Length: 560
Image (tube, rainbow, N blue to C red; front, side):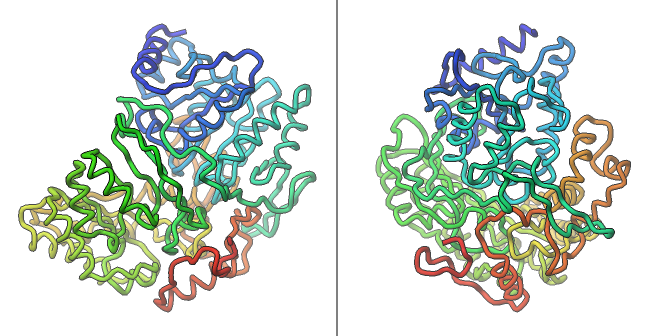
C-alpha cells in the first residue's frame, strides 16, 4: 500500500472532530462513498446523517470514502493500492456494502472511477458473491435510477433514514444466503429498487412500452417518506477544517418545499414539505440552516433572531425573494454574511409565471435594495435560459434587470450567474424537450454580449455542452450504462462514447415525450400523480399560478 496516501488519510482524520471509529469484528461493514472530493463530500448533510444513523446500529460499522484527486488517483495506480476508507484505511472491496450518495448526474462517472480504483467491476452482472453489494441513494437515483441500473445492485428511493436501517437489518438476517436471495430480501423493503428484477420492453422506435417485473419485486417501487423526521438526526456529525463549509455545523431546517416551482425536481421528490424541530444548537461552531425553503419553517426567523442576539455566526442555504426583510438582512449581516443571493430564475414576469414563480421585477429590485442597505458587499443573481415558453425578450430581460440593480447601487458588486435549464423527471416539464447545445450556447452568448462594457457586473455561465450531458443522463434509461462506464475510464468523452456505442443522446435530452409514452422512471412511484403533473404542465402553458401546498388540508398532488 502507498504509505504517503495512508498518512494523508490519517492526517485528515486527526483534523476532524466527531469521526466514529468502531471495531469491524462481527459487524456488517458499510463504506459510505461520495462520488466527489473529500472537501465537497464532507459538506453533504445527507451523507453525514446516514453516517450517524448506520454507526448508531450495534451490529454495523460505517466508514467514509471519497474520490481522490488526479494526483492521488495516479499514486493509487502506481503503487497498486486499492482505494480505502478514511477511518481505518481498509480497502473498499473488503467491505460488505458500498453505498453511494448521488446528487448530480455528472458524478455518475465518478461512481465508476471509485469502483475501478477499488478493484471492483463496474457492471453488476460482472460482480459475484465475493464483491461488496453496491447501493446508491440521493436525489438522482430517486427521480430516475435507470441510467445507473446496470451498475448499481440496489437503490434507496426517497428519504434514506429508515431505508438505511432496514437494509442493514436485511443484510444481518441474510447470513449464509447467496446474493440472489439477498437481493430478493432487499426488493421486499419499501423504497428499495433492485433493477435486477425489472426488464424494460423497447419498441422499434426506441421508446419504452412497459417493464417486465420478476417476483418477488413489486410492480412499482414506492418512494419512502420519513413522516416523523424529528425522530431522526438533523445535523453534521463530523466537522473538518478541510470541508467546503469549514467547521460549520449544518442543520436541516426543512425538507421539501411547498412552492411547487415547475422546473424543480428537488421540490417534487421532497413532498410533502416538513419543518423540523430545531433545538440545542451547538455553541462552539458556526451554524448553517439547510433546506429548499428555510424560511417556510414557522420558527426560522425566531431561530435566526436567537443566533443573532447571541452574536453567533450563521448562514442560510436559501432565501426566497419574498422572505427577505430588512430585519432578516440585518441579522445576516451581523452574523458575518456579506454576499446575498437572489434567484429570479427567469428574466420576465411572464416567464416566471410559467415556472410558477410569482415574483415581480419590483420585488426583485426591492430585495436587492434591502440586502444592500443592510450592508451586503456582493449580490448574486441566478437565472436560467432554455426554459419552456422562453422568448427572445426573456433572454434580453436578464442583463437588463442586472443593469437596473447595478445602476441603483453603484458601490456593490453584482455577480450574475446563468445556467441552462434541464427538464427533470418527476416535474411538470418532464415531457418537454431540452433546448439543444447550439441554441443554449447562443442564448448564453446573447446575455454576455448585452453586458459588454458593464464593469460592475461579473458574468458567469454553465457550459451548454455539460448541460446537455446532464439532460440526457437525467432523462435516460439503462442503455446509458455502457456510455457512463466508457466515459469514466477516459476511453472517450461522453459525446464520443455515446457515438461509438450508437446512442443518440438527443433522443433522451431533446425529444418531446408523448403524453401517453411510458417514461423510463414510470415504475418508480414518487407519490405525485402523473395526472397532476400533466395538469400543471397545461397550467404552465397558460401562465397560471398554482398556490403553495396546504399540507394536510388538500390532496391535489397525491402525496398527502
